[in-house]
Length: 129
Image 1 (tube, rainbow, N blue to C red):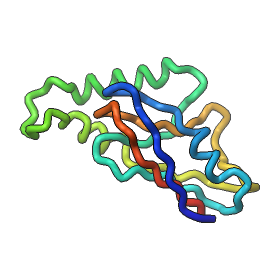
Image 2: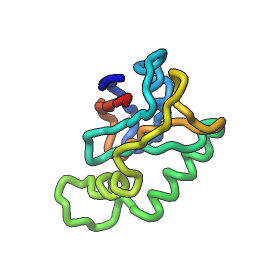
Image 3: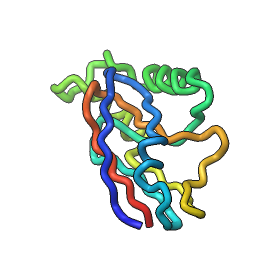
């Protein structure tokens, strides 16, 4: 049990970065029953989805861009309104059952940091309850 912090560097304005290994690395061997992963940023998100075929993440990113285009005339002056909206759609946390010192993810599932305003260094808070 405990709270852990990890830092993730992204390399593009928009990317889906698989952070499953980093998250599991900080809780490996520890006991608990629930794993909560959270990011305190407003222009990125966290999701769980397929990590076997990278085309799935490309399709998700493409769909988010169609729904929330970067070039729409938003009112927010910083020029990253699309990132804020995409973050709202994806959410800023995921919760995963945890048993026998491991997260219970499906066979094809991974945890992804969804970067919408990079490249940046992002803080991820991992809480094992």
